[in-house]
Figure 1 (tube, rainbow, N blue to C red):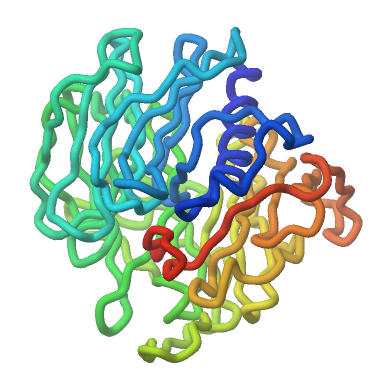
Figure 2: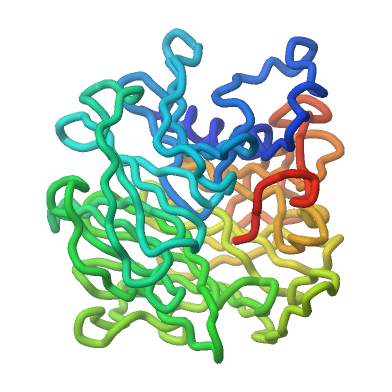
Length: 416
């Protein structure tokens, strides 16, 4: 099982880095046969966004990946890789003409009957999310597409099971442009009514960004922001959701969702304090984010069930920083751990290469600058270890072959 989890984290890191969007014609410029890195290629010309999970799972010796093509029709599809044979088995189409948008990538849940549920939605375009069930033990064969009509236009999907409740949760952006969920008691065949989960406290229409983790039994862990870092100097917040109630990391009750309504940022646990400054976007003006605003990237729990959050902070378009906040059972340790490089490009001034925490050991983490000069690097960090002394080592060899492109070069829309 540890080896399987290691495969997933390495796939997620490499797929994010090397499976990035490619413009039409880029494939002809890349000599894969001449690539000296010997990367494992899971899927070609595809990508996913980090605000939906699980995008990659391991089941029955197979690595299963959900993604959307960055060219052509932008199909949403599933890639299957045989871990024992170390080779790809093929891809399966979930929906064609899916807008060439990485936010639309499918996520997965393995049902007790060994069918896989896949859920996917478009990027704030229609009030619906889609789902399919695979055949038992065969992730290359999928049944008829099912739909669930939502109150508002849906974005993202995040599947987390609460076995003690007998429910599967799908967390997505929905009601009032905010985090919302529905639940299923039959493994995703049908879904109940929507519940407004987290509510923005800012004036106007804003969308808190959430990253989730779960223990599959009774708890979902949440890290979230005030809004988008382009328009808000975000703080970063934390809460746990268990038995229909919100809790702090130390077990202090925050509120009852059904009785008291959705969680508001001021009620949650403050992990990082941003400036709180807001700004309006000006059409045609350079796209810069609010300085010192946070954006959540990765969250895992350790063997004790303690949360660890990896996130980025925007200083300028040329200067992003990675930070890690860890709960040790008594208090939070929040510290800067690395320079994250410049923005992916000016039009997406908050986008970085991301920081990823190892689910087997959250003290080991990996990061990639958006425009790396050398390699993906990793480090180990203990709560008592000063950041400046964290030991680094290479994780990939030398310079990497990355394809990043602006929307006007023929790439898909990549805004969150």
